[in-house]
Image (tube, rainbow, N blue to C red; front, side, top):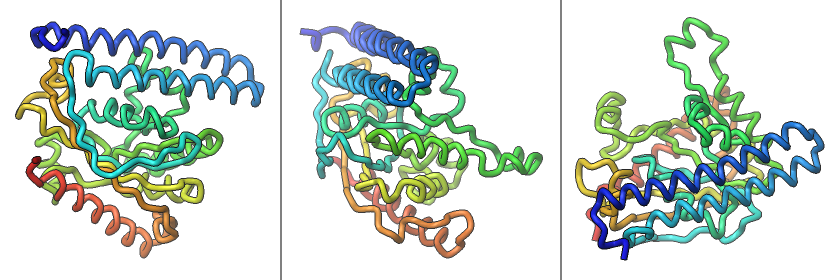
Length: 298
């Protein structure tokens, strides 16, 4: 019945559904975080974290509803995901839109441990979402420009130190670490500014990815290389608006799984030979993604 509604009304319904689900579940997670902070008993804190994680999965189911609440989105998925909520995985994914996050939540909700994202520091101040992500131990990364590091050399490596600290917390609860290797969403302006060698992607940043593999590689069971595209979206329209208005009719997802081999774990910042090898490997993965995105959808 809702499929017959006009697009503006669909926007209101979908946005309201997402906002209410985020507010109710997010505030409950924040409340649990207060107890976790006030009761510094490790065993109790682990139980609270487990419950908060279950609420996070409930949120994943809620946002997944947005793909079928007012319209039916067709999913074309090639490859498969592991079926193990008690494991540890790393996802390497391209980043085109905020919709990428609900897509990954939809994919993870049934059979993967709940994802953790590396977030920009500014997102901490987003109402409910920021504090909720903090309670869930998601790392907030503050990026420094070359000019800032030049003025204050002590800032060099600060984001890597944050990664190190958070990876230690990831060891104690099954986790899917999601890495948008481009570091930001793709736009034509950013593509031109960065002089990207890829047609549909920004250049991947290898440092954080490599460091996470170095810190947790012996714990990750697999790397999941996921490529997302939206052939159902209209050209020159924001994909998030396409989703809310019911115009996003199709999502393509390609999944490739491979083990964390020894050649992917090394000292990226002090071993020049390993750094060159890892950059070549990651750039190769990105070249394959670019070819997939270039291929015309069926």
